[in-house]
Length: 110
Image (cartoon, rainbow, N blue to C red):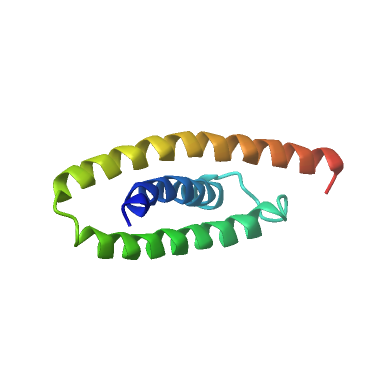
């Protein structure tokens, strides 16, 4: 069970950054027109929703394993630092992948 305590913060970072990127692409982009980007809007809705569901499920699992831990404060600090680092790294990785795929789609005229 201890291995999962180390994986949970990574899952938060990976799927949290994907959900955050999808949220930015849907809600924060003021020049965004759904008709101009017919593939990205449904992808962002589905991927963002799935990321939120995965983060909530992992959070529930994390809470149940957290109750059995004796060093709660240390685990919280370690988990938050791993989550922050993995969030930033994965955010830039997802953003680079997003730019690559959108360039590929626009180049092929899809």
